[in-house]
Length: 372
Picture 1 (tube, rainbow, N blue to C red):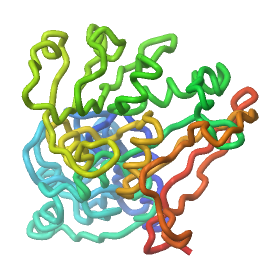
Picture 2: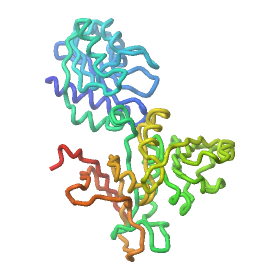
Picture 3: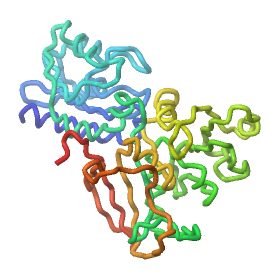
Picture 4: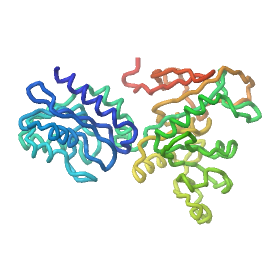
């Protein structure tokens, strides 16, 4: 196999880590000598050995001598002490001769430092293989480390005429059981779920994962500018799930919330329809809580604010073959919106799947600099 094919094999290894590696990236590595694979590995989760170390251990278990071998790793090896020692030192100590790197790490603690350390130690470094595919694989990690915010998926269910509720506010249920079960599975794949005040007041949602088996519960992120959501609502039940409440109300008795186990964050206001500084909230989630993925289940107001900011990375649209009609029925996206069609954010369909009598469409944002 050539270098690109070996990197594709390493990428397949990386994908095995799945969403369980958050907030770390998915990374895979394969060690090769004279065209023969000696070992392979992938990162299993935060705090566990990185892919390079896993590959070295695998080769050792198989009785192979990796001195003078090449390693194909999907992401630049780390050169700092975190929960694990630097991978660069492990590669140097093992006598690796060449390091083929898929893409440079966007984490400011690494960004080029790993390559410099390996080069200084006499290891040949070759960078830039399968970069587009790896960018998609670790889109959430690259978004958090380069844009200082989580990777945002906006989710909504709508009728065939694009309505999320009738003119009276009736919205349960637009989709059937299969689609709703799929939403629970998607929730389990994300670090946090976000909703705004009106969505919580109208639906009193639990925003949790209700599936058979053992699943991690995402943290609930609630935006409540004036602290008007009743404290007996489901989202404040923190017995099995954490809740972070963002508000701009500074002079309230916040102990009424903290006594419930709710974490309260005070943020500034701005001119968006939500009244809260969304970018400040997103930065807080990325920096303070290291959330990598955010599933937004808000209404038109919150989705509109995110759309106006241009930060919706992915859309999960569940459509039911129903028609509500009516000019006063609720739509999917509010906010200011775009003035010209040429300004609209373009997305590409990744998957379209039938769920019972409904359809789920997954769309990924197309960067404007490569849009047709």
